[in-house]
Image (tube, rainbow, N blue to C red; front, top):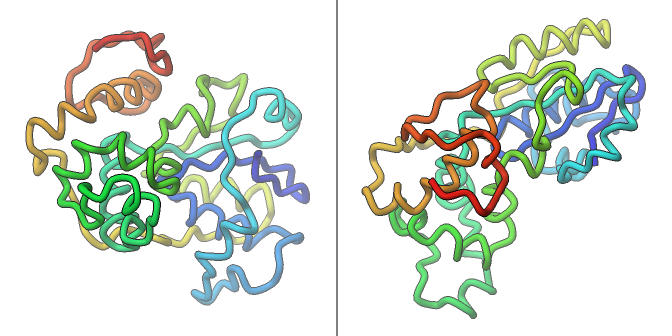
Length: 237
């Protein structure tokens, strides 16, 4: 469930599309239990296999509680940027929808190379038919839990604070730590580039995400939804 470096009593909850590849590579570089070659300090980073070494799992409070004596942290990202990165990275660059037999079989009318508006207007259907899209587009609470206070985490880093994370990992391990910028989307997509109908389709999801992460990021859509609705399906924005 958690990614744990026992040698330094570090526990990390990974959030997809929030620098998790980069953080995992940094941890592999200091983890005595990791096979040699994952991060050799000379740019030899194995982005693909590091996810097999450190698997991203959903948050389970009873299991996370077992690491109360560890340095427990997570990395979060602005919800709009994270969701848009699902499209630019997983759809455009990796082409995961093109490889989905289930999508072609059950929804042949949905394009496997959609434009941004088509993708986000049909996001729920793509998630239902493509497991990797679902994994990367789930709400942050599924991976980091509903509570981000000191009872659960020693530190919650925004993706903009990776240098601070590298410094802290260095202090804990007494080693020089550099967090590589791995698996970054080459293309950039802005919320303003989406049509009104596409934004309306993802607005309920984003409202819940910003309610959950309201202490760290402001909602550009201006929702007034109460934070208690962050993970509740009955709330209406």
